[in-house]
Length: 181
Image 1: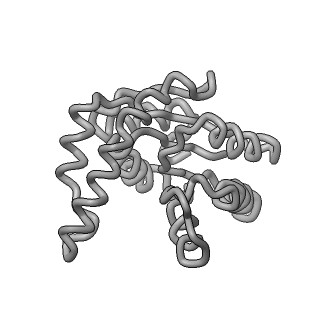
Image 2 (image 1 turned 180 degrees about the vertical axis):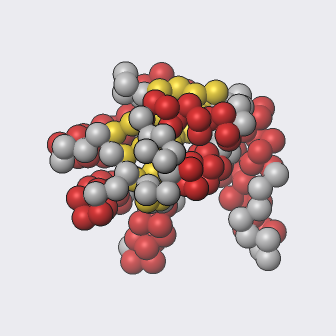
Image 3 (image 1 turned 120 degrees about the vertical axis):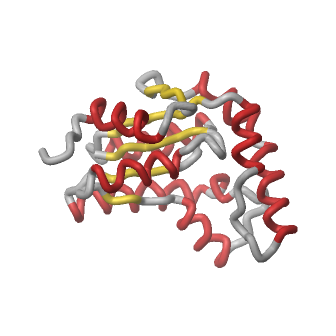
């Protein structure tokens, strides 16, 4: 099974997965951004967004399928994925491979998202790059929040302003993963 935790930048995807991980130790964590970072080292990304690379989408799906098939363990995926075509492409490949996909979307108000993004630092030794990253994330808020209306009908929407523990309790209950079982 794959548990895809989706939402805008700053919605709490990684925080939720960090909360789930110790409570669901058999689950693997797979961050598709790593695939994007590798591809950026090899090829040019004309739009600046590696999700626009068909190869990124294919590799994300293929690696997820491989992880489930090879290790027979659930896979947690914290990744913003809001383009309806890209969602269909990746989730379609997962479902075609016979993998159960639980798709969660963390809904958070634009004001809270902007505040969270402003409070983050990915490149503490490079303030210019840090600010550029924050600007890019904030520029995507409107598109990410609007995309909630285009996601698959089986998407579970969660209140991303709840505590990570509350969210993890909800996710674990919905996927039938109870600690110690």
